[in-house]
Length: 128
Image: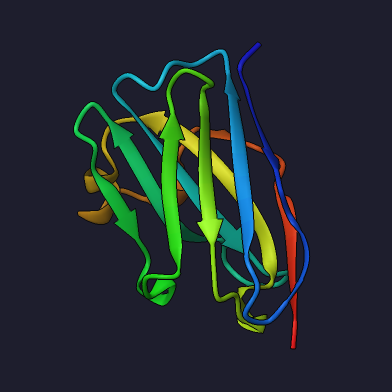
């Protein structure tokens, strides 16, 4: 079965850390980009970070400012997003997505929201 399942969300105080995980089933990472997005109700879903294979390209949105790290475990078919120094404005539902291609394709102009396969999201709440 092809699916993506996010986990690791929760409530954390400002300045704290969380590690999100995206478990990928039914896909390999070969020739694929796996990205993290976030969405606040009423706002557009936005790309947070992306990693692709085999080129190893990694993308971070400007607002990450060195606070998040994306990593992949090919053996476990998981992609994690380690988030540190969280801010209240990081509060959102975080989604992972997967599609063919490179993260660079999306950074160069492909529609991030056009990625074909999505998880259901995990909620991150950062209190002030």
